[in-house]
Length: 403
Image (cartoon, rainbow, N blue to C red; front, side):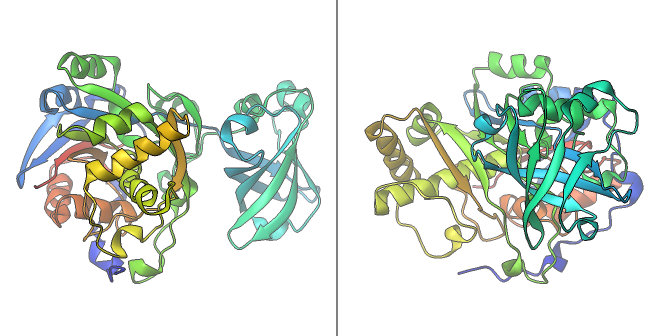
């Protein structure tokens, strides 16, 4: 049954001066708030190895943010911003970044009313010769409500990944109310980012340095990765009064078979770094249910977890997923999810969550409420009254789920 949740019940006052507009000079110098058994304690992020249970499994999202914002100009002088969201042709991330002359993307277009048709040329106010040599152009293929498909073409036989490096800007969140700067190229990226495809950083991971990662590994913690490419849907506000009216966008993810095997055969605690890791891991259960019932995994729908009771254990569902991968000679699962995690959700895999502090009336705040059994306001009231910095470049928390 789809939960009837009023988004206004998840509002709180976030003063502008509490939004971290820039990262701190040192990644691991941010504050860290621990929530365990209803109690709150303050730490510094570099203390986090002490808080991770020995022998647990810790999962990071190793997606990499791409400079996906491109600024074009019409002959009339009108400026058009194109924000690349999802590959269309080729449809695979690895292939589209390797193309050398043209490709198509689903995009959000700024100032779209000024662009009905025709070719756009990249805006190059400084006459940068490397930008000019590419002669990057954009053509509108078709428009569908908020999202359009745009064909991008260029000269010089450079791979599209290089084109974005030369021509694009880092898509920092709109609530920072500033243009991206040089500091964002380095700091709006985790140290372990590997696979290009996200248009937003999995920001919980921005705090980690090599020191914390080495110290956690030294405790006997298994450090694993998933890859979910974060879409622009993470920036889209909930506009409906009830969460049932909000539409989640599909986000692709990849999980190694070895991790699914480990999760299926252990009762060790699972630590997810970031809400994207949570959504990926919890989607695995429903992919396994699909294997049990249909013989193959299917994308997890937005409301799949709430539609009925599921009689299968986590071990049964994940075991079916492993069997499917074995039968098809696959070393990893590649699919997508639209899952939304709200109060009433039953967590099957994740026990501990490392995450930042999220926007009022956001789907991420609903996830925090679900994870803390409705205790989100206690956590956020404390953070607001004790000088914590909020949102992407803000401080961190480690939340232990009640069992």
